[in-house]
Structures are given as C-alpha cells and as structure tokens.
Amino acid sequence: MPNNYPPQYRTPSNGLGIAGFIVSLVGIVGSCGLLCPVGLLMSIIAMRREPRGFAIAGLIIGLLGSLWIFIALGFIILTGGVVAAAVALGIAAIPHAAAVAEMVQLAPQVEQYRQANGSLPAAVSQLPNVTNEQITDPWGNAYLIVPDATGNGFTLVSMGPDGQPSTGDEIDFRSTR
Image (tube, rainbow, N blue to C red; front, side, top):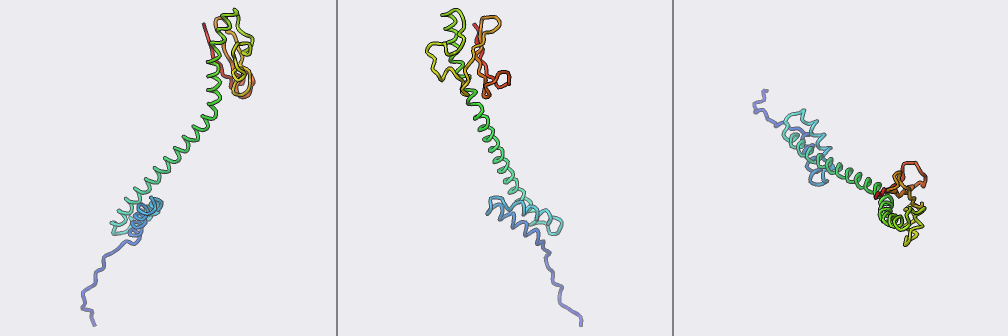
C-alpha cells in the first residue's frame, strides 16, 4: 500500500551552533564575558555544519566577549606590572633622592666654610650649624668631601647602601666654583 501523504519537510538545524550562540550570549550578558571563549569555540566548531546562522552570531558575540576579557586581563596585568615597578623603584629611589637632597643642602655650607677658612673641611661634621642627621646619608654612612684635581671644586660622596667605596652604588654631587 503506497503512502500518499506528502513528505514532511523538516528544516535542518545546527544544535551546536545554537548552543554556541546561547553560551556566547549568556557569557556576554550574564558572566561579563567569562563564558564567551567557550561559546566562541563551540561556534567555530559549528561553522562546519549547515545552517550557519546561529553559529555566525555565536562566533561574533563570542569573539567580542573574548576580546573584552583579553583587553581587561591585559589591562589588569599591565596595571599590576606598572604598580609593582613603581613600588620597587619607589622603595629603591627614596633613599637615593634623600641623599642627593641632603648633599644639595650641604654643598653651599661646604663652600662657605672654604671661603671663610681657605680650605675644605676634612669632614662634614666640621661644618657649623650642621645637624647629626645631615652628617650621615640615609644608610648611616658619613658623607665624604673629596676635592677635585683642580682645587676649584669638590664632590660630596655617599657610599650608598653597602657603605663600601668603588662598588657602583655610590652617590655623588659635584660642586665647582
């Protein structure tokens, strides 16, 4: 007995494409983009099947949400790196800056001593009106007064954090007449 009924047409569907679209949509709307890479991956795989409408929509939404996540993560990593670098440099730079500032304040006093006495003082402690804090650098080492070869100027020297000469961490401030 022949079947005289008309054939039933069924519209093909792409279940993975629909799932990728839904996951991407939920990812961008409900999870601030966290599920978007999953939806993007599902939509990419679903692009191999017909129909591709939902897969294309899921691909676009998943891509936008994933880009948002990568930009946000990049910003967080970059900001964290900048903050870490600023903290590291700030911690190291503060004593150095304090030493330079103290030497800038001491230089005119050394020059006044030379003009009044005809020679440089042997030590910063010989300067009048100098406090105990001004005699030593931030690391507790005494500042040195080193005359230059011409006799016209001098250099104030801090031995730096290690307190040892010729180790590369010395800080100096040159003054010339």
